[in-house]
Length: 155
Length: 174
Image (cartoon, rainbow over all chains, first blue to last red; front, side, top):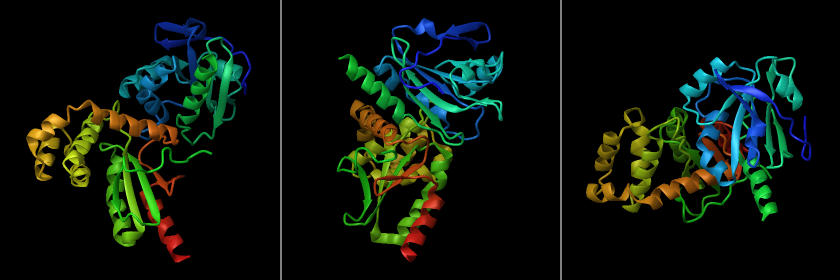
């Protein structure tokens, strides 16, 4: 798993059925990458729904959040619509798990991404990373702490 | 240290129970979340069982994008608080969770005995929504990742309301 101080590898994945997205497009912004095992988790207040509530807090720190799983762009579209998510979900679908592997957070046994968080600074360097047990929603306190220390560093 | 309540309970909070209670339970909840609705009678059971040993605090954690009446309900409870009827409204909302709507909230305000004109004005007050937002942000800072999340004496309790009841029973027996 990539750690603080590593350069965040660029990648290009589908964000919608007809649109690809690469993190180099977000230069000059802080980026939160949230790898998660699968769309359609059965609880009503799941991790992606929580982040969806937090977009205004993230934008306070000039940060954009991206969700990533190995689900297809069509699954992401349906999931995103059903939860009214207002941030992109990227499909690490073909070749399966390639980006997750690049970041060292692919679970070969399950064929899914681990539940892992990265905060990347405006220069594309990883400022914080965290691997959560698969069954546990890691919340967002770690992300906010990381963003806060980035902001105070720049002042 | 993870899972610590930030900030600690203060007079900014809605507190039910005895000041000198030794067990302080804080719930981060969403009025439209079915799991919070299920937790509501369990909290009452805990309060009945442990009486003055328990102090209960409710902080708002509305998942407004998933539950469209979560935020209006939270604001309505805060507005009732301005008329000294926070807990009456809190109880009514959870007891009528299935019929949550704008009309429903007004009907509850009436049942709670609120001055409706004042209620109507108060729910527009930006400071009430700011209070709800501040609760939400404190939840995030404290490591809340969904609802309901409970804190016992300032430390996150990883379990539901029934688990909380069992834990309290067990520690009472020790």
